[in-house]
Every structure is written in C-alpha cells, then in structure tokens.
Length: 292
Image (tube, helix red, strand yellow):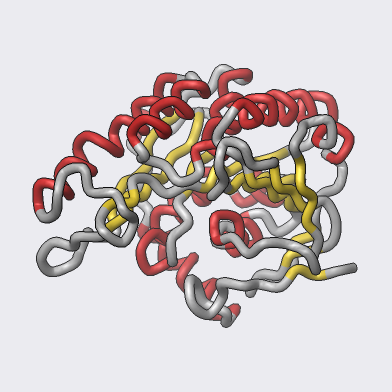
C-alpha cells in the first residue's frame, strides 16, 4: 500500500518515535483536570486544535486529543479519525486523500476510502495520493496525536476552503456518519491571528498593545463565533477579522456539531509570544477546544 511520507517531522515535531510519544504522554498528564461539575459531561467527539510547531502549540493540541480520547476503551473503539485542515482560499477546491497510508513516527495511519461517493459531488475537488500531494502542516501536525489516541482508527484527511463548500462538506460528513454508524472523531485544525510584519498584518502597530488586542479582542471574536454555533458566522468573522488561517475546517466541524446539537467549549488558549522575555512583534494565537 502506498505510503505518504512525513514532511514536517524532525523540525515541527519529533521524528523519533520515543521522543514523540514522550511529549504526548507528558502533555497528557499535564492537561488540567475537568471540574467536578463537568464530571458527568457527555464524551466529546468533535474538536479544534492548533497546528504550529509542537514547541509552541503541542500542549494545546494534546488537550483537545486527550478530551476526545476520554477513557481508554472508548478511544480504542474509534474507527474513523477525520482531520480537517486548511491554508486555502475561498475559491480553492476541497483537498482530500482517499487511498494509501500516511506515515507518522508512531506508525502508519491507513486512509479511509469509504467517503468517496459522498465527497466527489462536491466541486471543485482535488484528490491527492501518497506520491502526488502538497505538503501542509495543518493536517500533518495532528497525525501523531491521532495515531497515539486512536490506534485502531482509519484516517480521513481533508483540507477545506473557507467558503460555502465548508458547510456542504459538514452536511455530507453528518449524513455519512449517520448512515454508516461509524464511531468517529473529527478535529478541525487552525491557528488564530497571525500578527506582525512577518505576516503583513499590523492593524494595532507593534508591542504590548498589539499583543493585548489579539489576546483580548481579535482572537476572542473568533472564539465567540464558534460558541454561537453558526458555521457561517465562523466564516464571516474570520474573513472580516483575519483571525483564523483555516476557517473552512472549523466551519465544516461547526456545521457537523450543529446537526448534533453540540456547543463549543474552550479548553485552552495561548499565543506564541507567551513565555518569551519581552514582547514579540510577530506572533500567532492558538486555541484548543471541543464540542459537547
């Protein structure tokens, strides 16, 4: 079976299996315990995770996957892990891989091909293979977490443009999962505001005020759109505020969540400037959360 090779391992996350697993295990232990009032909360199966290098956002991504994994027996029963990435324009096609395997440091993930008939009517569409594809961190950075958390799952990797196709894809996924009865999890991969001269986006200048604005105003506007339960609002806010790099992925999962009556819950938020001495002029926001 054709194997798609890792392209960000060794730089954005560890290539060595032991190091990769050690990071995830450490973050699993460090994730904050759920409040006692939430002890009876239903299990989560839809989430949002960041996709920067693990040194910046790995701990947040781990929070999302730990919440989705829940109990060990539940995690082992997951049959399908849907990872939705982005870095696309509204006019771009959905990008999908529907055959082969995808390499991770912890072992290969078999690709799920059963969604083909539901996906192909959505146009434009570009199908990738192990040999013909475009490297993109929004999907690949999630895969070691998928392999660790859901060892029996097949992978359905999709990149989603931030436009009407995102909502149509969310509807198709909902119908497919209802029809097949597959036990699934789905993760939308996005980072939030990319601020500073490195990204050509400086509406509040530089320094402490710019960082405050992103943390307290611009990124919270996107989180509020998620909490509204309106997938179209996710797209509208991201376009207006430039506060998500892969809003199509999030909108697709938001539409899937809406059809199941689930609401977004933030697990954690940070920026790449956190923990640095002084202020950085170029930084990115990161979000972890699930739908319950």
